[in-house]
Image 1: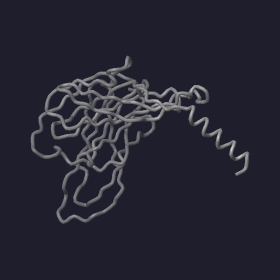
Image 2: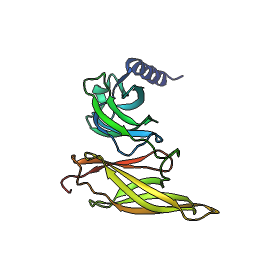
Image 3: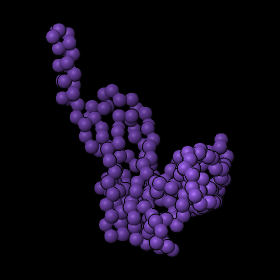
Image 4: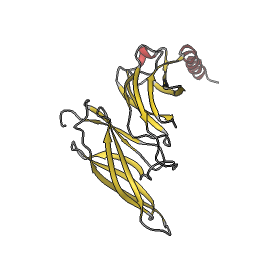
Length: 237
């Protein structure tokens, strides 16, 4: 083995031994709580935050339900020598957190309760009117896109069968910072033919009840997992 190559290897090992990765609290900024869940749904909330440098990396999210309080713990990984070489650059993120199938009622939510910078909120769960997994069949949504700076949005979806077609799009908000969008499907025929058809549904969203300049769009989907996006409202409401 050449001496130069050996020196490089030893140097790499030396740096690797010096650098330690530690688990830290993920910096959280805002808790978004959609409305419209019932006890047949897997309820979700969204937590946003900002990493102060790109050297932070996501670790894990832990959810613990204790009586009527939902505890969410969010951590990140960070090298202890990051300040030596990592650039100062804010990296925004948001995390969709499933809090599970809950009984009807109201629950407190606390994010990173053991940290001085914690978040808290409340979520309401309604009693379902049927034993179905969900009250409606939603579209198979791939994403949502805003048309310029308008209040019109494009819901990008896939129709996997010609038996279902869009019935309507319901929207409702929590009078604060979240608008839930429900693209509801209906059966239009029997004797289904499988397909993989890309479609776009247009809808307008009313932000007049929002009390923040950054709102969450929470789109329910056929898979049970939501599609989410943060919208900068500025002063255009």
